[in-house]
Length: 124
Picture 1 (cartoon, rainbow, N blue to C red):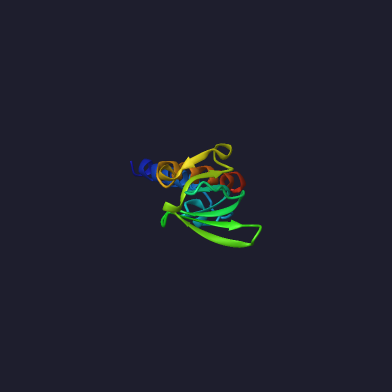
Picture 2 (tube, rainbow, N blue to C red; picture 1 turned 60 degrees about the vertical axis):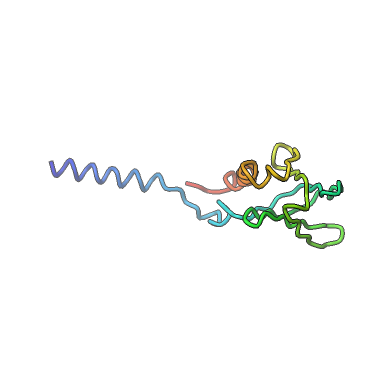
């Protein structure tokens, strides 16, 4: 009986060790970050659309940091200062309304942006 229990424990330990994912090639803060880097456009409340560029999305403060490549400057765009966001890697740049962006759709956007990490990472 003790032999069976011992073999069962050894088997369970071996299975649990093999099921763990190595995150050696991807920093832990990139797996589930509160801030993501994306490329796309932002439509401001006055109707102006920014040129396509890289921006940083902070989901905690609900703010977008937009980098204007022409003037080499960075702008902080608050939640109430834009109406829509278009991200190149999310459904080929479809526009997402501000009210939806920092809710459930924001989680989908984050998942779409993280897909690149999973493709490049050595997970096992």
